[in-house]
Figure 1 (cartoon, rainbow, N blue to C red):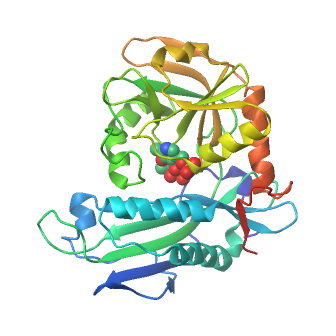
Figure 2: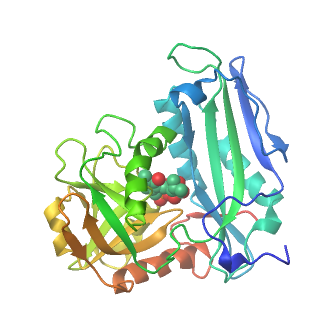
Length: 337
Ligand code: PLP
Ligand code: COI
């Protein structure tokens, strides 16, 4: 990997040596299969292809300052994968299958784990498909779970530099009793139209409102929302927001440094009262927001042009744990290598 420019990596797919797979058929899961094949073969009538019976996860492995490789909160991602599978009536892989599969992928692709200090990491993408062939809309009896890896840099090309986002009142990401709280492909398909509109206007991501009243902040298309004011970490509580593992970690870290953590309704008007606003997620880590542009009213909410002190502090606290620079006192990391 001597010719790899790790620092130049964006959030894109780079092939690695192998991926792992489990197949569910005849009522049982296969043993783990390791393959270098990047393709899958399935029936043209497979349920994932027609009815979106598909889910995924995203987590990262970091090469630490001490040379060790740490997987961040893998059990939490495994748990969320299982809740997505349950929601789509897919067969449930065990926690052990998911965690072992993630560890195996990291070990076998060791040479693709970016060196410490490059700001890059190894992104793991578990993805699961309903593969039963048929025409009726019904649960899949067959499934495929793949876990693959790709070295990645920052999700937003700005990195820790603030991003500009667009607020879309006319498109919803997820309905209150829909699938917003699980990580299924359909949520992302639903967001692609408004995301394209925002990109065309020069914005990096879309901020959505609640789909029922359109008066409360929900989340971004690929990350949770947080706002900082008066030593408070404020984040929306909603049945249609994805329970972000990064957000959960930031809430803990904010509490650790004596901030008040509020998980509650966040009315749209409150946007103008925050000192700092950020997007958080595995891919995004923390992306500070400098501007929110309301696409329908043209109203602009402006924050700092540089990352704010609290966002920076939380970012460092999180990355210190992920890169093994401090004691992992919450037990979030699994040392793989
Ligand atoms: N919200 C959405 C819609 C996402 O796609 C993601 C990414 O995974 C997140 C939030 C952040 O979740 P996590 O921190 O678990 O990666
Ligand atoms: C992640 O942060 O892991 C995501 O899945 C976000 C996005 C790439 C969909």
